[in-house]
Structures are given as structure tokens and as C-alpha cells.
Length: 89
Image (cartoon, rainbow, N blue to C red; front, top):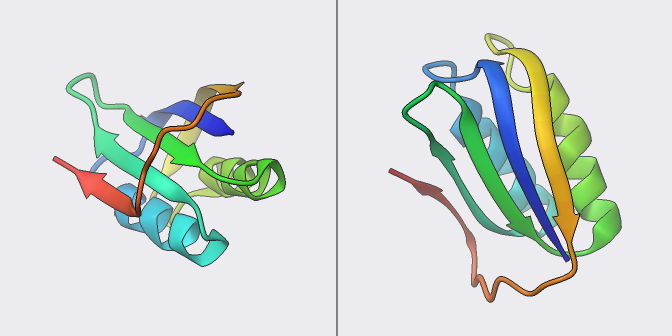
């Protein structure tokens, strides 16, 4: 299963990508996270549905300096074929 999320708020320049990678690694998820030009952060994660929901809960919290306004997300029944979780640039 895949989680695709766009995180809105003060999420760039506050270690949000690093926080997301560390959380995904801890949960055993695969995929990626990257900053988008409009100031949002995009997350694509693959794994067990319960672990993806736990990641989503953590995305709403974020690191201490982040201010999350909203997250647009969807769960998809597909396989991304990822081998690890990476920060994309």
C-alpha cells in the first residue's frame, strides 16, 4: 500500500524531510520525501497500512520548528517498488 501526502505550512527549512526520513526508517517504510517549489513537502511511502497511518500521524506533528497547517493525502493500493526511504532534491 502507498501513502501519498502533500504537507502544507512552515515545513521547509525546519528539518521536516529529515524528520520524515527518520520516522519512515523507524517504521520500516520505503519511499521518498522532497520539498516542492510552492513551499510544501511531498511524501510517498510504501508499506503496511498500520505503519503508513502511524507515519501520517507523525507528519501532522512534525519536528519542533514546523507548523503544519494541513495535509492532503490518499492511500493507494499499489506497489511503488522502493528499496529504501530517501530524501530527494
